Length: 503
Ligand SMILES: Cc1cc2nc3c(=O)[nH]c(=O)nc-3n(C[C@H](O)[C@H](O)[C@H](O)COP(=O)(O)OP(=O)(O)OC[C@H]3O[C@@H](n4cnc5c(N)ncnc54)[C@H](O)[C@@H]3O)c2cc1C
Image (cartoon, rainbow, N blue to C red; front, side):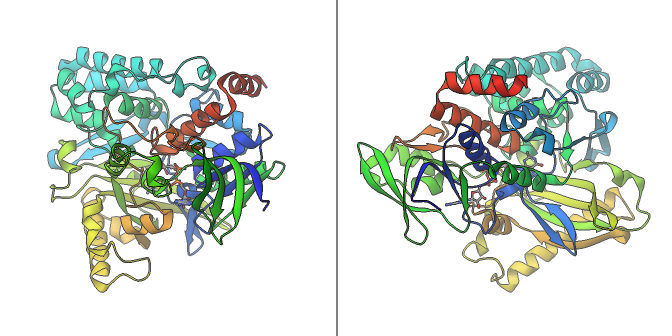
């Protein structure tokens, strides 16, 4: 490690890795600081009995078979697209959603047009409204330059009117049928905010990519981490794990000139980019540089939903239905209700079946993600991993039992074939990912909310990451592109993007 860098990047999830790589490709020197013992954040995998499981990267939109999707483009500009192998879920049955309370299951196909046609067939009395709804989603995406890095440098990243109205209000405006409303809000599970909280625009930005195509990646998030690490090898990037910025020093004219990192070492840098939770960022800002209103705004951001998860393997001749890649179980068609703190029934549950190579054998894994909210684990919030009291063990055991029972009502022989290898609560994610509440997606994205993004009150500090624009791997990576565009200048960056995309 040197004593001076052009940039310090804090946090090595997909956003921090992307910021570091984009800057290094502009011949800048970068120090990447990560609090955990290894880089990757939510992209990381863990292993139980040799079987790999993804933490926060199961599937994504943004890949296209012609390699012209948003994620294809971003990875190409980063120079790591060839290292990533997307595996598209079958178009005819990408995702199934079951509503056991009304004994109904829908198969959602891949491709927006295909899904739209299918919905019009299933809800013939709502044909016109379905078209209106999807057209409105598309208009939002067309107007969002940040969703297309090919026109990044030329258009401003402007808000649209639908940034100020909730998804629920647009559903109420166009869609009469409760079940159809539920289907059109199902992807709230992919950003963790309720339909009556998130803006229609942000929901559309996230859902459009997932409707168009859904893919897993061979090797999961680990494939991304390796690709980044390989790319760093020939560039001026140092990674320091179990390390963070502890304090800003030598602040003059609202610029921090030195950064005291873990262990007390002082590093000089032109700028520092934080890709961590906003609450953690403002802890570092001396009070005299922030207004009470600014702090109040940041402290007021609410955590998005998280998950209680089971990780295990399927053995023997389990039922073929479990070949479904993604299967969601919604206990009610009122998505606001089942995502809200005062709902006491079972919460939405997503089953992710996958096949993994573990050296000599191929195993079928299952990760279940049951929506969870911070108050459910508040009682143990003062504890740390491996040091929680017995009561917590009982909570985990009961929740695991109930999830298994819920799955068995859909797949009766499920428990004969499933071997549980591990469980994770929001506290597990909190402690592993160093995020204040263990939410899966950072902060809630609320209509009209102004996130912490870009330049901060100390002018050479910047915020990016999942909480700054949109969550998910694509959203977090997009924030990296937006911030680097600010740092290197939009014309230079646009030229760089164009050069990379025409090769
Ligand atoms: C269970 C789960 C399932 C998910 N499933 C999907 C999915 O299928 N598809 C999808 O697209 N998205 C999914 N997500 C969301 C997605 O993983 C995230 O939105 C995205 O990866 C966030 O990237 P990031 O770089 O902003 O943050 P993170 O990946 O959280 O990285 C932040 C990094 O900063 C580090 N850090 C924190 N504080 C400090 C500090 N003070 N100093 C230094 N380092 C610090 C953390 O240790 C971490 O490594 C899921 C998330 C979870 C938890």
